[in-house]
Amino acid sequence: MIDLKNKRAIVTGGTRGIGRAIVLELAKHGCNVVFTYRKSSNESKDLEREAKAYGVQVYGMQADAASLKDAEKIVKFTIEKIGGVDILVNNAGITKDNLLLRMSEDDFDTVVDTNLKSVFNYSKACIQPMMRQSFGRIINITSVVGLFGNPGQANYCASKAGVIGFTKSIAKELASRNITANCIAPGYIITDMTEALPDKIKEDILNKVPLKRPGKPADVAKAVVFLCSEYADYITGQTIAVDGGMSM
Image (cartoon, rainbow, N blue to C red):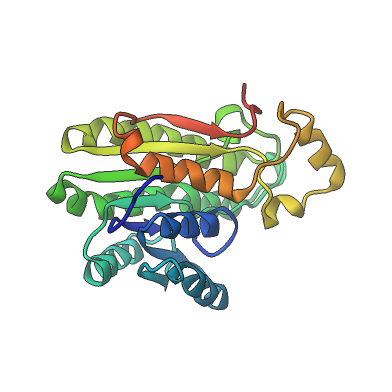
């Protein structure tokens, strides 16, 4: 059994889908958690109640993932409330899909700011407290489309590919301070986002998955917990695909 008792985590974009599953899985393993959300305050309160049932401290905080000022505020709050930051999970992400011909500058900028700049914001805000304690685990949620691209998602794919490059760079910068940085690249995971896809597209995606089934948010969350644990102490700079073999 992985034991994260008394560890302290920040999870961005924590109220729905993969983020929610990550918060619950961390709490289940004894980790205290501060998670962020953009608008869904009711969902935040529900998640707080559910996660606290594991006997840990859990706080939801409203924040704009694209704002460095908000990231610094969240890190300060986390240190004050739960005593520090051991784990950072950069999960916040959005899509604004369109063919490049029709994609607006705002659609490109908003996706990159939310999906990529947020990773910079929270990583930058967390590294000083992590360096002072000579321990840290940074897990960035990217996507398999950041590995091989996808039509109509140039903005999303660019942001997720950028997360991978960013993670490799900081893994090299921070390794001497006992701080690891890794990516998890989900494939076809059942979330509100993927459930909204037309049936034909979902069928086409499943045909590319060797395991012939979609994943669950908990599948990603379990990989996050593994990377936070002592079993992953010697893993850094890597991208682990949780995709049923889709990216092989």
